[in-house]
Image 1 (cartoon, helix red, strand yellow):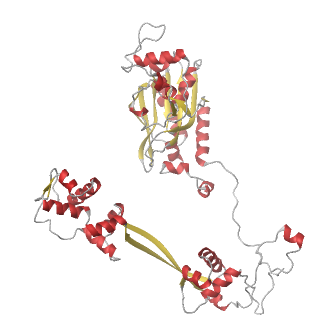
Image 2: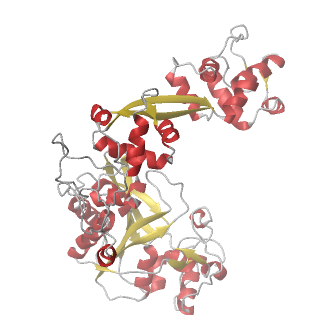
Image 3: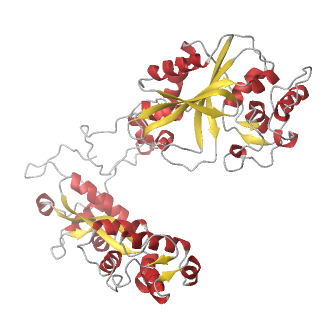
Length: 509
């Protein structure tokens, strides 16, 4: 085995090169093609690009190679941009259509001219901003004489991109990029060459195989004998190994649960796959409510839902239809003005709100006073953005005892927000089908502004009496995912569901 402390004749510690590094450095010392891009090095050395890239980085760490880096912005026309350059931008074609129709154009005529709805919308907006198109319908030129054949700014920039020109109007370029007509790609080009030390290093005879690992099998078989091993540097830095830790978002949810436990609440859980009965009906949400459509809920296929006990189903049906409950003479109210559909009640649905957990808890008819909460997942058909996600956590909670009022609920909201370090809270009246009165609590996000996270109210009699509850019950469905955004310093709800292990290990999603 070679001794890493052995020195050359000139007193310098020998530099160990792998065969690949030796080949790449030999290619770099070609005096006719310097500096070289990685592709050129690969062609000269005959090695795969990935091997060349790794060898270059190792040669650089050994001070045998140097690199020059150039950052380029490449602008090209997309397929749509090429079509626009050939056939004309939608705004140009719109102007041409206007002229062919004497300066007045209806929507039907614009469609007949081959302009799609998206093209018409883009053309109309741009021409009106350019003061070429009058407001209103039918479409008219604001000044027929002023709308000459001079190129529009968008046409100028499109032509400049096609000609690979550099001095462009960046605002117009960005607009064309948003329209999908121009593609802007930022590239980094690295050019490599040998350092002075890399030029002087003697390479003759150094292209011998160097082994990098010594295994138990090598020691047992004696295969290590006669091999030359790479020097081992005990001073070399090694990756820092961090211990296991909780996901920051999950840890925060656990801390929030601990706060509620400290306030005297007990935790309750419920199934993620519910029926429409527990998810909506028992909460006195009308069966034709828009939020129950396919646009807001996930309906699993191939799964059969089960109805609740017949007496409970009958009592909930009576509340929906405005009939008196069994054993009572007068109805609680007018109901929702239609027949209750049992087939809808049995339909399975992915839980869209943890209020279903509270409903199941109340159906067990707990003895007052009671305080319970649930922090769990819900699912809704949402357009995913900074505030919304298909999957989110909600903190459902209820307080039931004689004398409970809306003031108690507001007090709980203030206790919770202050406990997690959010000082500002706004309360305003609201409406929910299952609570009356109802409120919404808003907290301020540093970037997104005021966001609604604390909806709640007092359960209506139509919810409580079919379940056999005789005391007032304050209920809420806190958007803890949004609260976590503020507490963890996130500007986008999607960051909480991060699966980047490095980011999670550093201390947050």
